[in-house]
Length: 135
Image 1 (tube, rainbow, N blue to C red):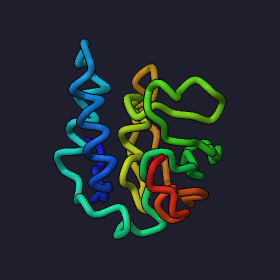
Image 2 (cartoon, rainbow, N blue to C red; image 1 turned 90 degrees about the vertical axis):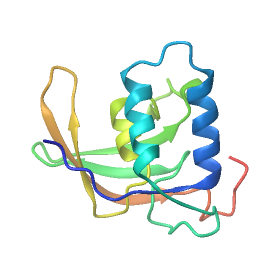
Image 3 (cartoon, rainbow, N blue to C red; image 1 turned 180 degrees about the vertical axis):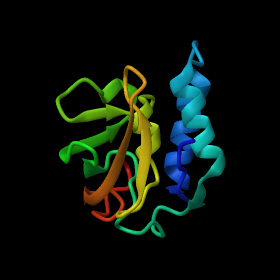
Image 4 (cartoon, one colour; image 1 turned 120 degrees about the horizontal axis):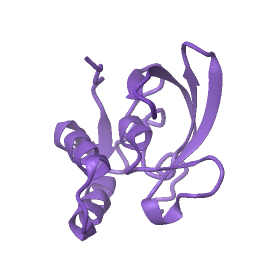
């Protein structure tokens, strides 16, 4: 059983992500997981999202609890993934990070089926907090 902490997303991210899902030819596991996150999210205006919440294009600092390894990741749309440190919203960890608040943790099924626990330590950059709503 994986834990699913409450999440918050912006109306703008919701609209962009719904457009992304609508555009997919193959509605695979990543899309299904993302849709499930969108369905359970608390949706707020872009000017109402707290600074410590992961939104699209946020850069986050998280730790994998069993190994103690730290990760610095930027949550991006699939077309922007591929660069070092980026994670697609359609990747399992990407959809799991969306909407998390600092201090929350997620159980993430890594490749190979191992269950990892990631704790969100900081949101290092959030477009909304920086006043960059068009990103």
